[in-house]
Amino acid sequence: MSSLLFYTDENEAVVATDTLLHYSVDTPPGYASKTIAIPHMRMIIAATGSALLFSRWIGLVNNQGFALDVDAVDAHAPQELQALWSELNRHLPALGNQSATIYHFGISDNSGKVHGFAYRSGSDFRSERLDYGLGVKPELIDKAGIDWNSFPACAPEIMRAQSRQEDEKPGDRVYIGGTTEITHLTKDGFSIYSLGSLD
Image (cartoon, rainbow, N blue to C red):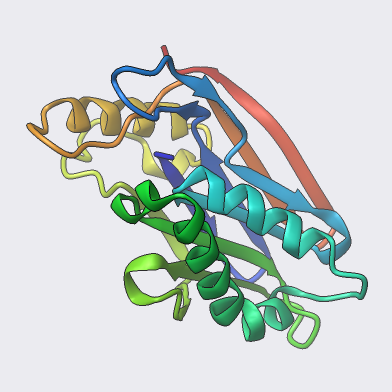
């Protein structure tokens, strides 16, 4: 999984992802949604890295039989993600070469504000509270020529710049492509839409 852009403040979360799935140079690319809205929880789940972990995690969170919010999920996410990652690695040893980060954005039942969290395989899925503002993964070194204040309208431009940057890397790189998908959460609900092709 590849490009993830997000903006949060107390009242909204806007998450942009590309849709390209790239497994290896020997395998044709595929496409998938990398952000999922869970309306009954007022929550967005997004990911970079392992698509398999993302798919399994969405199912586990969505199939809870009781009402949770982003904070309640955060209380249990590290140990549940650790267990799921261990299980997946036992059955698919090739996952050991991959990394994974899960992102949660949602409206807290207690504060009424948007909260964001990241859980990274490299830190054993420890809960990391995200600051408000704009997040860009992978980090873009040359930010020139992009109207950052227009986010999310500028998301395709950021993703194309990320892709050019990744193309210049000699080894491990991130593949970005497909379309730009936006998931926008406010206290009034969700908007989900596409900003078109990156190719």
